[in-house]
Structure formats: structure tokens, C-alpha cells
Amino acid sequence: MKRHRGRLIAVAAAVVPVLALTACAGSTSPASTQQPVNKVFTYDTTAPVMVDGWDPATEYSDGILAMSEMYETLTRYNSATDTVGPMLATSWSSADGGKTWTFHLRHGVTFHTGRPMTAQAAKASILRTIKLNGGASYIWAAVKTIDTPDQYTLVFHLSYASPLALEASADYSAYIYDTQAQGGGSKLTSWLNAAHDAGTGPYTVQAYHKGQELELTLTKFGRYWGGWAGTHFTKVVFRVVPQDSTAAQLLRRNLLIYGLGGVLTPFVGIFLIDLLVRLIPGI
Image (spheres, rainbow, N blue to C red):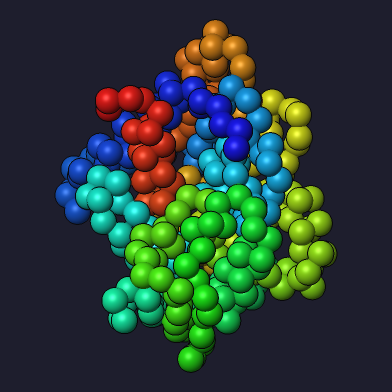
């Protein structure tokens, strides 16, 4: 797994207003109703992001920065509270001493391919990830079989007791995606690696320019289950700027971080906050 450090000044600049506006939620103060100057969020990185392929089953590097906006998991881990919350699954329970887990899926979720996210689709993506045996697929090591008693229920039978609700929130290889994109099979792998995505997240690929400064642009997915009411960034741009001096100039000229008065979707904001905590020891 290859990892590099993003430029922390860019992340910090983005996180501060997110925290400030979250604290004002529900109030009538000007801060809570402030509109973004520009609805594009630009993330500055010192090296390319998409360096380990585009397959959500096997990507295991810095692509997580973009993958986390295109794809979602069954559950979501909150590092601030050390708890697991809902994402694509709205509730879950365990039985048989932790060897059987039942997840109830969110209704009305659409993949970026236009197909509905169902229990059968989720099962197919997890089984494909397990079969490919790449990235962090070991998170599913305990899974023996998966049943889909109805369109929105997943039942996991494990070979040994395991905290599956937590494992299903993993940053890598826990993504749920449409395995039928482009007909599935080997065609799916080729299609994904040609800079496409098949997730359920708030953003989808708009443009990818390998080796260029403006490497990747994601745009909002209009049919996102979370909706777009309120103030949100409509685009996320990953800009490769290796030189600190250049990045500082872009930041001063408002060309690095746009829309500081706006609010990221909850998932973008939480991910950036988690990223900042992981990258700065002791924060």
C-alpha cells in the first residue's frame, strides 16, 4: 500500500468552516445561513491520488481520498464517539454469539449507473471483493455465506464470531458497488479502471486527467439518496501541487480552496476531519 501525506494546510482550511457551521446548525445566526462563495471544493495534494487503480474492491492507496466520495459502506465509524452508525444499512443485529449478522438496508438508494442498490446487489459486490482477494478484502474473512431473504435484508453467516458492523465500515474494500456495470465480469474491471465509478456516494466522476495538475474532478450525483437540500459543494477537485510555495500562492489567490463559507455533505466533512486527525499526531 502506497501512502503519501496530503498538504495539511488545505485540509485544515476546509475543516474549520465545516466545524463552525455544524455548531450553528438549527440557529438563525448569519453563519448558519451563509452561502458559499463558490461551490467547488479543491483538495491540494503533493502527489497523484489515483495511483492504485479504480476498482473499489482492490484499491488500497491514496485513492481513498476520492473513493470515499464516490462509494459508501454499510455502516460508518465515528472516530469522535468511537461508535458505528448507519450508512447504506439503517439498522443491524447479531445473534448466535456474533456469528450471524442481519443488516436492514436503506430504501431508495441508486447506484451511479442508474440501477437500484438492493440486498442482492450488495451481496454481489461483497462476494466479488472476497473473490478478488485484493486490497483490504481480509475484512470479510469471517464471512461464510450471505443470504438475502428480501430486497432490503442481508444475513451474514460467519465461520467465527466477529464485530461485522464495525468491519463493514472499513475505509478499504467495504464499499458497496454495482457489479453489473458494463455487463459485469472482466468488463467491469476494465470499465472501472478507465476512470469510471459504480458507487452510491454523493459524488461521481466528471473528468480525470492522469499526470496533470488538475488530476480529478468529481461532480454531485443528482439522485443521491441523502439529497442536496441546503448548502453543499457541487464539485470536488483534486489538484496536484508538489511545491509548498506554489500551494501557498494558490491558497492566497483563492485558487486552492473554494467555498469556505459553505458546508460539505456530512460524509465529506467527516472524512476530512478524520483524515486530519490521522495525519497530525496528537491532534
